[in-house]
Length: 170
Image 1: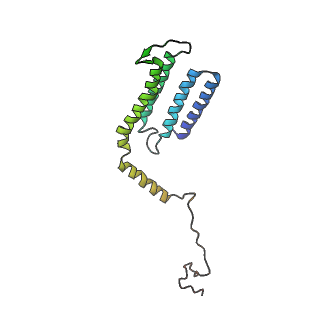
Image 2: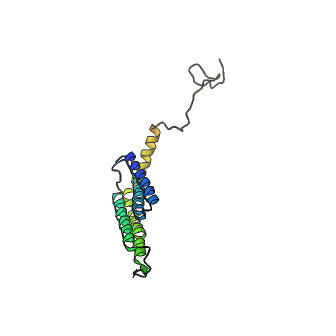
Image 3: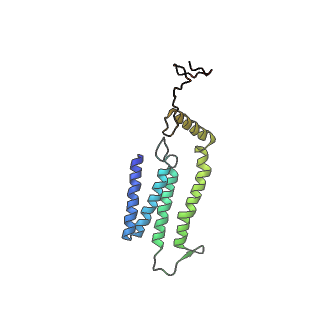
């Protein structure tokens, strides 16, 4: 998927969230907003080479399942006219679903990812390779803000544009 297509999809999700909120469709809004958050996270993880989401595919897919499961659980268990909730572990069930699916599980996923996966993709050898490749590209590229050296002929220079070291003007 190209970056333009991904950014267009994010823009459509943002417009969809605005429309859902303006119509008062808060359940639809929560799902669209959840997908919008995931799309932004996914777009931020796109690498220069390789597939669009590698090595983040598992993380993004897992977060998608957790967010959609958590939102579905909340909307199935919660209603504004309920005055007495069923408690689990001393917490109302909608609150427990919210905490487990939207806070606790993603936090554990992030910890797992940083401990297990990042060691393989962010080792010192990989970082050194990325830095050396970036330096090589910078040296080969003409950067727009790079100062340019302008050679000017002065009265002390010889006709072949080499400076006159003795200071003679003849």
